[in-house]
Length: 93
Image 1 (tube, rainbow, N blue to C red):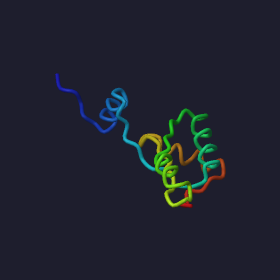
Image 2: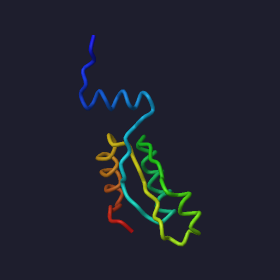
Image 3: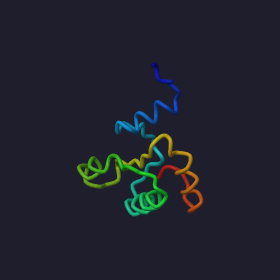
């Protein structure tokens, strides 16, 4: 029996296998802000991942490489709503 291949079913199977497409929510050099945003999202059961943290440390933390806050593609709209309700903007620092 062939499985129905809808975008939702594909995403569900990807999540079950641990392969979740991630999208960038924002970029910033502000580590305190990143910590706050990750905590805010975690409180709403949204997993967030910070990319480029190690690269930023290697370059000496001079702010040349901003860190990227990533969330699952399925969680993007909800994550934006939560952060906007908390007074966050999505401009790039």
